[in-house]
Image (cartoon, rainbow, N blue to C red; front, top):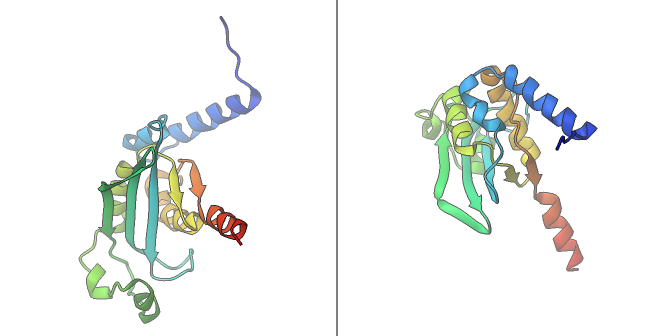
Length: 166
């Protein structure tokens, strides 16, 4: 039996192949594999500020979710050494001082470790768009592209749930 792709399936397949072909580091091709069923990665970053174009990541935390279980034993935590210092305003928010992150990993090594941890799993996060934008800024020089995984933003879900209960 011959099966045909719908135009949307065809486009997604073409885009996937184009991204794989242009992947800066072929060792990360696994990010385009089918994700394990019922698995996600919850992700959060701490940064030196809220400006995506000029601030830096100083901490990344991620945890695997399998089904309805948060796998706290399968977590990823890393401090990232910023190229510039950590401001007093950002220390008040996340409690990470310059001396705390001075021995952190260089950003490119932290990104490689994070990509291996995430694999092809969809990403879940609260205000995930900001974290992904910060990560993509650090990942782009390595891969020539950003994170390809599907993304699930939960802040809207939280507020929808909260306002339904009022």
